[in-house]
Image (cartoon, one colour):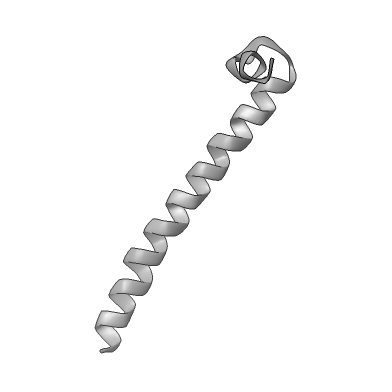
Length: 46
């Protein structure tokens, strides 16, 4: 049932799907910023 709803069968599906997409996007953005920003910053400081 949940898999079908996630596919976009019910009104609640879009909200859950978008939440998952935003959460994954946030994690990816945070990871990139952490690796690039802090990494470069530490290198420059060193």
